[in-house]
Image (cartoon, rainbow, N blue to C red):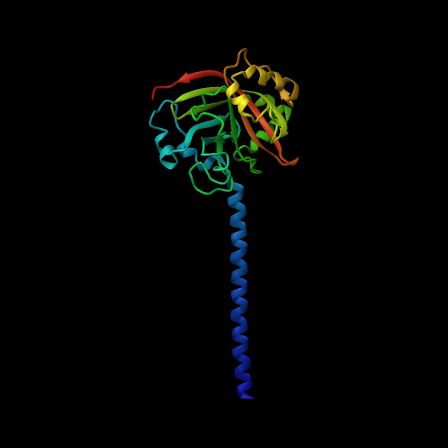
Length: 248
């Protein structure tokens, strides 16, 4: 009887230890899930890189960004939105799908210039890509422009290049399409040099449109995924209202 009682006591202790271990693992997993949810909710938000935002009046302010990642070529801001991020260009359009502007792996990727474009933004038509993050990070706020009131209230922005050329931007159109639309994604548009043809297309296809300035010299297209349709895309268009060459 004594041996049986002792064996039962040992068994109970082992069972207690196993129970504690299972509960500990369960708690750790719950904490991990909460942390992962938080991490994803923060992914792509501008606050993580704001301390590196360059100052157009300070020629040295791009240095820290370039130390982080030499692929950084500019900084894009759409005023009063969460679009306030570095712009990079990789060796192709896949490199920054899951890599952040700091060069590290990232679920939110980075805002990047199309491989079709020149890295100094000298093309008349420049395509920028960014993930649609549910928290509004990266190009998540592009979807907000499908609301007419939001479109009317958020009109301005800027893009500062690493050469310290600042493009003052004005949003003039938003449209929904698919990833294969030749009116949006084609080498002919990038190299053709006719922004007026692009603007004519937008007059008929855009969800919302307002007339840009005459003979707009340069257009930026901000493209993101639209989850409401397979291969759907939402594109926000901005034209350059002014070019400022800052001292470098």
